[in-house]
Amino acid sequence: MKNDTHPKYQEIKFSCACGAKFTAGSTMEKEFHTEICSKCHPFYTGKQKLVDSSGRVDKFMAKMKKAQSAAEKNVKKVDDEDVEETVKETVEETVEKPVEEPVEEPVEETAEKDEKKDEEQK
Image (cartoon, rainbow, N blue to C red; front, side):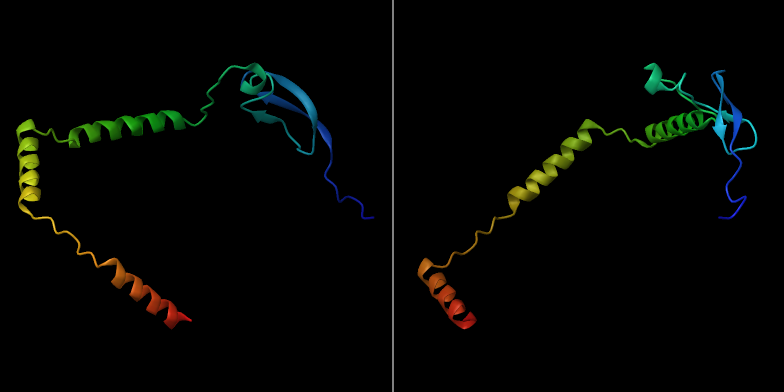
C-alpha cells in the first residue's frame, strides 16, 4: 500500500450565520462558514427562513416590478364601441357566406368501392 495517499483528517470549527458554532471532523484545513445549520434549517425548526446572501431575491423583485409597470403601459384600452363594430362585421361576414353542404354518395357505391380496394390489397 502507498503511504500518504489519504488527506489528513482533523477536527475543525464550523460556524453558521445564525451564530451557532460546533466542531466536527473534516479533511479541510481551515474553519468553515455556512449559512444554514441544523439549528436554523426549516426542516429541523419548522419555521421558514429566507437566506439571501447576494441580494438575488431583491434583484428578482425589482425586475418583476419593472416588467409589470412596462406591461401596464403597453396594454391598450379597448373601447366598447370598437368591440361592438368588429363583432357586427364578423357576424355579417359569416351570415352572408352560404354554407356548402358535402355531397353524399349513395351507400351502395361506397360499399362497392370498398370491396374493390380490399380485392386489390389481397
